[in-house]
Amino acid sequence: MEVLPYHNLYVGMIETLESIFEKGDYSDKALERTFKKNRLWGSRDRGFVAEMVYDMVRWKRTIDFASANALRKRHYWDFIAAWIVMNDGRLPDLEEFKKVKAQKIKGNYLQALRIPAIKHSISDELFEIGQKELGDQWITELEAMNQAAPAVLRVNTLRTNEKELKAELLDKEIRITKLKRFPDAYVLVEKENLFLTEEFKKGYFEMQDANSQLVAPFVEVEPGMRVADACAGAGGKSLHLAALMENKGNIVSMDIHQWKLNELKRRAKRAGAHNIQTKLIDSTKVLKRFNKSFDRVLIDAPCTGLGVLRRNPDAKYKLDKATLERVLVEQKEILETYSKLLKPEGILVYVTCSILPSENSEQVKTFLSNHPEFTLVEEKTLMPAETGFDGFYMAKMTKKA
Image 1 (cartoon, helix red, strand yellow):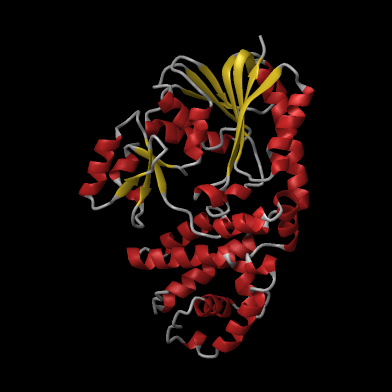
Image 2 (cartoon, helix red, strand yellow; image 1 turned 90 degrees about the vertical axis):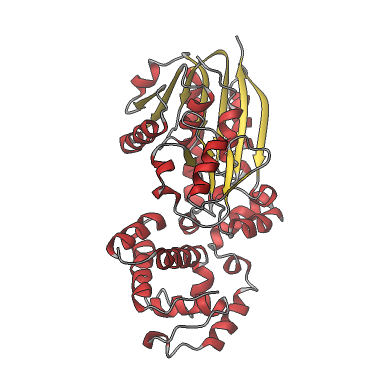
């Protein structure tokens, strides 16, 4: 592991980790603040700090064990040192690292590897949840989700095409490679901040995991249809649906949070997605007006997010049995409520970014048993270990005439 020797980088790291671990901030937002505060850092500095922070968040419990509970003591220098030692890196010649006992750290780390939950850096409770639902497969999936996620982009066909985008990025010495089996997906060959490029600002592409790009085609939309994106959030799926519909027809992107819909509007404008209408769901009266009015209903349901831990490692330490139970109730209610928006002979698609059967196939099975007017057409489970990308579940149901 390459380690940079500059003191101010570690001070920035510590401030970022404190925001994440003590204030509950998301890693990306905490890093964004740190970078704004340290505008003189070069791209190499920012890359080093970002990679270190994400890795240390991902392996928080393992590192804490190896460092003899440095986090509980708020000894962040010891915490960082433990991560460097665990990866056979050379500690920088800084005063704060002088008293680090590397052999003790290595001994603790070897002990951590014998305890499955600590080895994979998750809570005992989350380990039990996964083991109960997935059995032996749980360990395999944990190993996959503890890897850094590849940077994948989706070509926005409303603005450009694959050939033009690839050529423009290549002019900037940014190389992307086509992913087989995914119509508009490319993976970034080397780390780059694509959000700073003119191509991103002009809406030529969106950053979207490859498996996530399979959701919109699964909905089987056509130009001219009326489509509901029931839990739209910031609109990643809505934007993809708009491209597949060639801006023809109407997409109503719904959410209970106005700030998410505001972000969706901003993204839609950049992407040139003109057939998207946002709708804040602040009462049941709003939904009743949409009863039986959509050809397609996509429910990208709130979930534990266990399929996207590579992208959101912070979530590993916030998930417990109480969270899962609350999510299961919410998912059931959402399926009941939003399925009423579908026209007869329409298609309902239920999606989560979880890999737990209780949130996925079991929810759909319960829904179908209570609603004989719906028929299961197809379901897919995309596992991180099998696919190399995020974990997703998709179920497609039709409604009888």
